[in-house]
Image 1 (cartoon, helix red, strand yellow):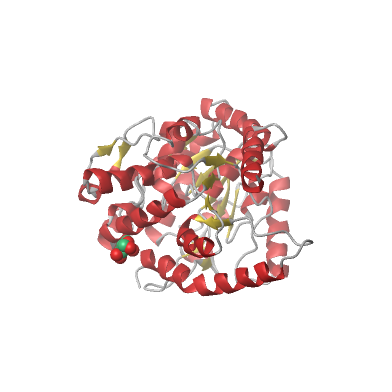
Image 2 (cartoon, rainbow, N blue to C red; image 1 turned 60 degrees about the vertical axis):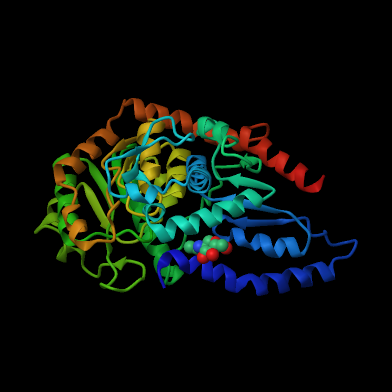
Length: 408
Ligand SMILES: *[C@@H]1O[C@H](CO)[C@@H](O)[C@H](O)[C@H]1NC(C)=O
């Protein structure tokens, strides 16, 4: 089954279970237990609206990405339904698209790959039509970061009210999958102990999430870039899953096998190569001065929260678009690449897409620059993101309005 239809089938097959569970809840309700007021569903579960409708209660969507992206999907669905425009024809072209939620024209190469393929575009258009049926959309963002995009969200025809309630973060590192907690705990304390010995803002952190791994050619370029930059580094290097298998990357038993000869020995004084990383704990550490990131939305929100500037290296899903937003729209990141991985599925093209050491090194130097404008802006946004959640802050007020609306 193609990955794009998997989530749809998955959600459909769960409707009966959700219906049963909610029916039980509703039956057992009495004066002491709260009544069912509505559903809040993840964006990919929007068709659960059908079940909520059976119970006669409203549904709210929790949109786990940003408002620029929400604007994009509304825009593409409007283009398809009302203007008969098929943007998948622009796939792999140099074209740029004007999208109201963005200030700048967006290169089609920075758009999520799925949206540029027929099946994925149809799937998302269906999903987006369901968003319009919701009573409201909660977005994991905050007004001060995305005021432009949020202001435009009422310009795509009939859309429900939007509540920016972010950044919603889990400020406790995820445990590594499939590893016993004791081992993970040991790895974590070893990493943090190493960071304790480093000067403030002196270490660049490279981490590409639970699905991020690279071929050997690319790993060698990264190693070369790190060595040339001369900066201290903490590098989460993962082994790609076996060819043809859809599973998560794992840790190398011995990373020296894929690294340049003697790399570990030469860099022993300045760097540490690790496998899985407790990302939140690392970003929170004062020794971290820059973050080479795949730009998953949660990673971006975490990095902004801790005031660590990002060098963008997107890989899949809407990461290219997030990288574009960070670099071009908001001036909150430096660029290593914005388009990397936009032709992810074709191995022939993928091979050409090895980023060379010089480009990576330039990005690392830039993100580690002590007095850069980007660093200053990120520090400011860090404060603003924290204020948004405080009493009277923008997201806190927005959440209050949402709660008032449900219990009216
Ligand atoms: C979109 O919805 C239509 C109408 O319900 C359906 O026929 C079609 O298969 C759906 N497309 C995808 C890709 O899910």
